[in-house]
Image 1 (spheres, one colour):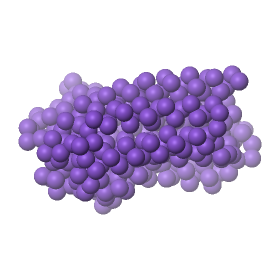
Image 2 (spheres, helix red, strand yellow):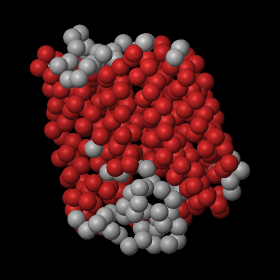
Image 3 (spheres, helix red, strand yellow):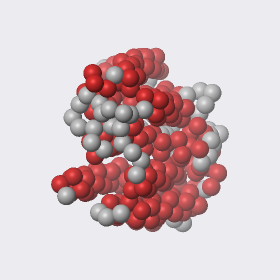
Image 4 (cartoon, one colour):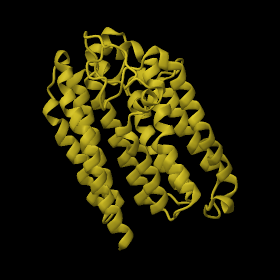
Length: 315
């Protein structure tokens, strides 16, 4: 979740001066769709339909989930964020210390009612418009894994983001688990195409987090923070990310026709990061150009996947 830092210190900001703006800014609005979309698409494509669970679940993974994920990150990464020259835009704000407590409370309190709903929905399908014959235990376990991964990534005592390789695996879980939650709450069976698609999505997430860590290598080493980037180095981390993107594309073959068409998506990301495959650690911040393209490629790939899903639904 963190972004590259440098010796240039930032002045903490409150994203426009208001508490609300600071809290919203901390949740990375540009990334909201990256977690809401997987849940909504998985729920609808699995036959869940437009129900209370669909609406509430989509809203949850749109804002409160992201506030929990990025808010915790901003609070406990404060010292390194101070030296981040790119904070203040789409990649997050430097959260003023005065905003830390309110951000954490906002994250917790905004999540609680949605989580209560999910627990209730797991046991009361007729009331919440859910399908018959699903497993409450499966619903609650997948939801628990999703929330735990979000907290464990940045929270003190766990800090999975500082455990090389586990950082990439946990980060990918942040984006794949909403889709899994959508599937189990819709009562879907995990068919072979679904499993291959989820596996491909997971490897895409692993690759994306690994490449994102490249830009932080020097700053993380200065701050004595471990990551997949600090352990592998810039060049090897980029090569690892390229391999994961390639494997993601290959896995989509198992999704069958026409899902295999989505294999082009991870290939696009692979091409985006390929120019950095020989990047020296000292030049790691140059990878930010590829990371910024990544943020906008998410919109393009989301559009392409949406068109494919519409086509599948209309077949």
